[in-house]
Length: 298
Image 1 (cartoon, rainbow, N blue to C red):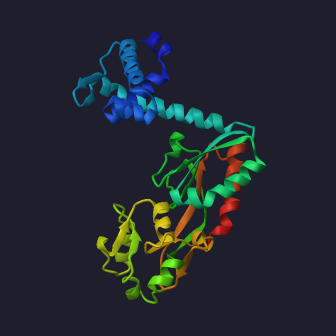
Image 2: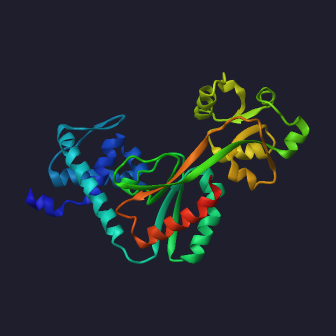
Image 3: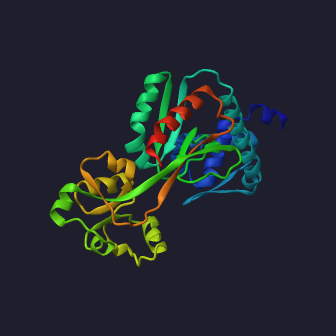
């Protein structure tokens, strides 16, 4: 056993965990951005090294054997330890250069961050930026991102978070559309216009219902779960839609409608792992984001 421990390859354990969590080589390959044959070879190599059969091969995928289930918990502990080693090492770096991975919502990534990142790159050309534009949550504890811009306050004690402010929302239509269809002055008149909203995401519906409006999915003539797409539908004159005020104020194509809707605002939090906060390149990107975003927030 000692000999096995001396030669055990972490990459094999990582592949084992991915297959165990996804239940197939294809799902694990997509998660790890590796090829399916490579993962298959790594699983066979691990089984040979440990002299154990770790998976049942079934027509619909792979399931853990008793030996595989026994290995699962220590393998997860090994993964956590590797992440902690990576975080600790990154926090000790002294150079303002290297890659920093930022995750932010689609809207913020498309309409807000580009000029901020352009200025950052001009001031710190040694920093490479990896921007993950997604409305899903990336795990900072597992280094899926180094810095996150989030619309909620994180609860993990290992994370450092700073609230930058609030992003107000407004109701918008394109000027060309409003010239043709008229400008609503009340909520009732607004409902006579085609509304642009979400498809499977029920966030707008719940927000309206919380304010006492009998909103249903049918209120929205155009539905898409992509915020940037919805904004471009508004700009194209497809109807009325909701958008971030700082985006709308910089867009001459659209006009904000003041119907006293009492729309909510979106809190914006800047987040990183506490082990990374003092890394020079993380600190430089953190500062650039904070300085660039604060003037846009209320």
